[in-house]
Image 1 (tube, helix red, strand yellow):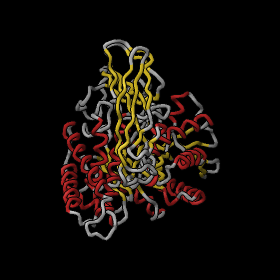
Image 2 (image 1 turned 30 degrees about the horizontal axis):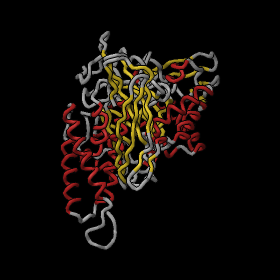
Image 3 (image 1 turned 180 degrees about the vertical axis):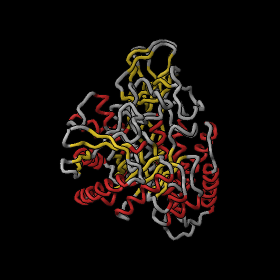
Length: 514
């Protein structure tokens, strides 16, 4: 909803009724959540074609993005306030058309809006059971920094649980952990510290402290994020490694290229201990060792060192597509614009390997900047379906700049590149639309399963129509707002019609349902 008035309004409140269908079934208002849309500063205007990985210093536009729970709000004259209403449909809800009222009141005015929600028969599983592989990299230290808390204190962990809940509800699969301190050369406001302390003992041997690693993985698993643990990184940028020297009590920084004897020796020692620890925690089967955007030859060298240690180590790689890595990488996320052909994605799936894709500070479109048209965030899920990808990766779930709730600008990257959610476990327009695209992915998967053998000519026509739309989406190499909206509008109508047909009695007349 968009609230506007020529005069100032005070204490604007929203009251919602239950939604009821013609048979008297009730969709309770307790499942509806209104939030106001707050504006944040951006360094580019809406729909801008941002330069490659650059922030526009000093420039500022207001963009609607942050969703905030509210009790009431005031509205200045001749201004607008968007209100975002989310509805979680319980799986026990009877299908049907539900209607109810939304009443907006202030101290001087009142208006009632009518709401209609069409609930269809097919039921999606809960987010933890979705097939879409969502990998949004987390930086738990940023939460401690923002709230000025001791990292890994009880207060910090309590906030992290709420923070991770939002990710889990979007189907988040990967827990982001760090075995290396500052793996990306201090590229964010709050450095990603190591979760596994490397300690060089007085006798020259090594020991490793997993307390933070264990705490964070356990927190994420309690939140429902338990499909995969990624440990970054085999290759820190610049090959800089840090360890604690027990004799001096100082941190020591050394450079170990992946072709060096020191790299092989220390990593084999660490992996001996890591494997033992993961087996004790029963986490080994879900763990991946991660590499991100390193040169191909260095990546190959590091992978060979790891596989020489134990061939069963699973590797995840995010970066340009290199056929030489295909058979070595269990989980490959290729950069949009440098991707495998469809037959390579299909071949990986046939071998039981996962393939995803990602956007970062490039390309300009599609993307999830605060100035990106929101349809682009939803379109990302459709592109995954169209290309046969298992899911999507984004480098920063929460790498907040200095004042994220007011200013999304970053000194190095376009506004919004570094985070999708806000402090306090608050969502964004971009994050909600990304989740919507993931739900579309799951709907298409479910409908294809239900309708693959249907003899209904109408179903066959609609499935062909959906396939043609997906072919056009899969062929896209860049996107504008009009194209995204047109594709998504057509796809939404087709999915809705197919969902109605999914439970029509079979034309064979044998009483079964499709």
